[in-house]
Amino acid sequence: MTRHIHPRASAVAVHAAITRRETTAEAVLQDSLERIANAEPALQAWKHLDAEAALRQARALDARMAAGSDLGLLGGVPLAVKDLIDTADMPTGYGAAVYEGHRPAADAEVVRRVRGADAVMVGKTVTTEYAYFTPGPTANPWDTAHTPGGSSSGSAAAVASGMVPLAFGSQTAGSLIRPASYCGVFALKPSHDLVSGAGVKAFAPSLDTVGWLANGAEDLELMRAALAGERFEPLPEAAGMRLLSCRTHEWACSDAGGEQVWERGHRLLSAAGVPVASLDLPASLAGLLQAQKTVMAKEAAQNLGREVMAHGPRVSQHIRDLVAVGQGVTDEAYAAAKAMAAQGVLEVLALMGEADALLVPAAPGEAPPGLAATGDPVFSRVWTLLGLPCVNVPGLLGPGGLPVGLQLVGRPREERKLLAVAQSLHRVITA
Picture 1 (cartoon, one colour):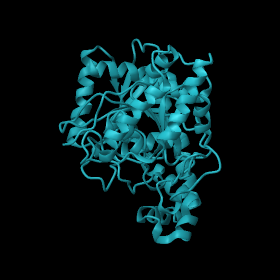
Picture 2: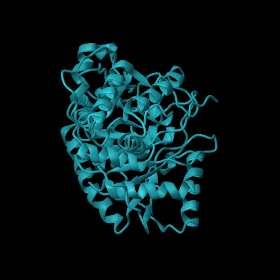
Picture 3: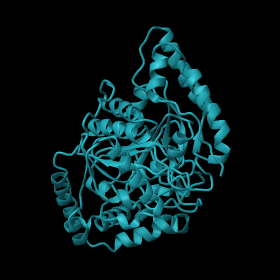
């Protein structure tokens, strides 16, 4: 087992230290670049890295500080951007051979916003092809013989190894929560309509959601506030949090390690006196998993069908097969899946009642061995379909010594409340 896990910086702490002039943006970046240089040969988390450009950004921020100017919420924080998200000053290849060297004309909206908040853009992280199942070369920092998950592979590995404290990812099925679970980091998949997807390669727009990974819940909140143009406030204590535990209709997909972590998490919550009630989802929601697959296939065919026609075998068999399935989905079947999703949201929110969040599995278990596949997104598909905010909460290890997360699901546009619960849950399970 080869591990590349190092002490991880907090984005909130980095920004505070720079603001208090206890360090500089350049010094923070130099530390980040040293970590990258040490770990990157084994992890292969980066698709494009431009140290000189990042140093110019950091030095410009330090000059502004020296001149008496204040920095934005992400001032001096090194940030990675998934290579699915357009950057005008760096190539964006979408993990696809046919886009190798592609140069977008403009930044994605989320990139524009974090630049405005004075983040230091370090580079682009590896994504699976078109954010689907064909992996890049990235390895898991906990054990390089295992997958980091996908599709936000490089972003999860970069944060987990301490290369950067924050990274953008995205999720259409389970591409944020699963790699965060496998790599032992926090991730937020926000409400579907919370963050603009402009300038992000479209796969299935009804499902595609930009999110981010970090080392703590407050770091996730810092990014949320920066993107929203809000003032950052530390997360409140989730005093008396009430969780509703749900194994979901997909529980049979858990492996023995996943089941052990699930049970251990519940024992820790019980020992801490946290009330956790159980919820069995009704049979009326059992079709949501297939509904997500139907919507994803149909919309993928609409968005990637021309590229399959134009480039043929240069596009992976995974994508060609999905497009073929999607082309066979009738308009009636697609409409029925969308209607099921709309009804499913109403039912889930009603079932949540007075609970602060649903507690559900994040992944079937530990990261599978090998780099040829990225694992199963089964425990995220339904929540992505419903557009509800989700957080991976790390802190527990499976029997093989690799991380397995717990997933929290909240109400639409209540990300701050959900992150407060995530922070409290993490404290309980790591106490």
